[in-house]
Length: 156
Image 1 (cartoon, rainbow, N blue to C red):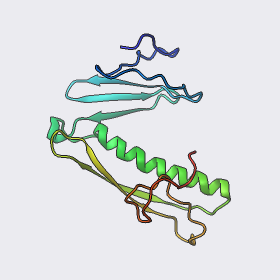
Image 2 (spheres, rainbow, N blue to C red):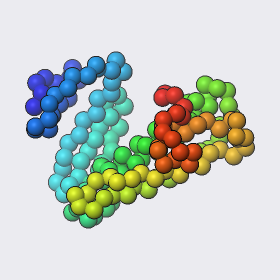
Image 3 (cartoon, helix red, strand yellow):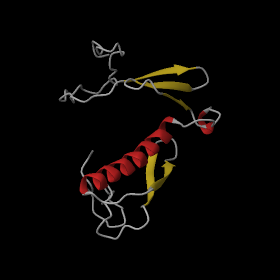
């Protein structure tokens, strides 16, 4: 366990055994979130700045009931919402018209040991944008429709 905790009273960071600790610069705009496990494979996560809480649960095939997002579901949800938010911020900065956009994510798990194998994202852009007005998808994957990696709109 790494010594110390945050000023907000969050627990100290935990480092996996057998892995060397690598010190990285600390971001100046950090956000503290706190997770607590509960019975029946449920976790409550609290967003420090807003106090908003969300709940995760193990998936059905891992002993949960399937009544909530699994932790790996949130990875896919985070990717989709990050992409949509980044494109909307880009459009706003560039003065581009922006309507409703949406994304669908399919999370594909590997065979045991279960891990995220792929996240397939389909983005639906707002109607009425011509090709020059469409913000590039942030961080296009190596198998994206245009191939190649990187590129995309700058981070928010």
